[in-house]
Amino acid sequence: MPSASAFRPITPAPPGVQWTPSRQLHFSVRGKYELDLPADCPVRLLWCEFSGDYQVSPSYHDFLEVMQIMEGTGRYVVENRCHRIVPGDVLLVGSGEFHRIETASRSVLRVAALHFAREFIHRPGAAPLELEYLRPFQYRSANFVHRIEARALDARLVAERMGRIERALRSSHPSRPLAVRTFLADILLEITQARDWDSEATLSLGRRARDLARLRPVFELAQRRSDQRLSLRELAGCAHLSAAHFCRLFRGVVGCTFSEYLRWIRIDNAAELLTGSDRTVADIALATGFASQSHFNRAFKQLKGVSPAVYARRMR
Image (cartoon, rainbow, N blue to C red; front, side, top):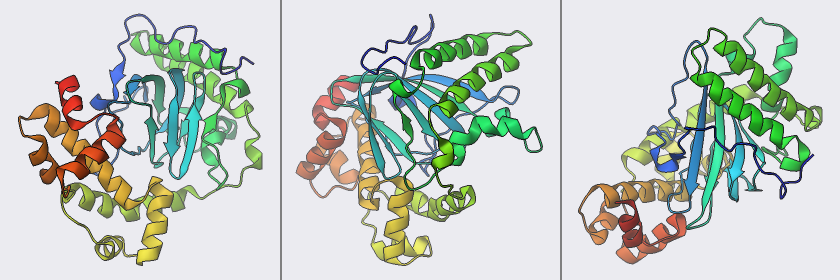
């Protein structure tokens, strides 16, 4: 297998494909990534560009996702785990798993992000053999690793199949869904063969869904009152949990503390105001919940890599 350092995608993106800046991705007030999957072929392939000047907040989605790093380096944070990523690496995201990608300031990381509905591969009542394609998404133990290193699989094959899926999705041929499903199955087979998934202990997907549902009122409260001080007692009560249990559950599901999550929301809101209004930095700092402009400047630079003033000049 090619090493991570030697891997060069055959075609990072087929001709005509435009890289989608991370700031154009859409999220709900609960931190859910919103993306419509067509009914006839529930697959979407996005060629995303992550910039150190615009870090994305932790988010989740209901569908399954396979990402491949095409260019650049950075970090992949999923729930309470963090992985260094390089070109050729493949990342797995299951339903309801909070995750984000980080890259250094002034650098760019490009990713092919393949999103698909579980039922597109295996419908309830279908042949059990088809369920084997989804084996990597069925295991979520405490030791589960969401990153598959480029050297552990045929990274060139995955990149080539990503390109074929892109071309098939553009096609109007009647066999379009079959072609997409075939190429997706090739990728899933390569992933399945890359690791002994049977050695992983299973974690109930039902429990994961319940944990996420319990925290949804907290996500909504954080978005609605992100500029206010929220007490631990209020947050725990919103989830009907003790303070200690809430802290453990939130970090286990989201991958960071509530304070860190709230800071992401405030910085995201500030970034929108910096590029979409004429308000001063001091005014924006107070409007988004920061006690002072100096505190805001430090937090903004830590997450975005540049000061608010520099960020505003670059994005306008």
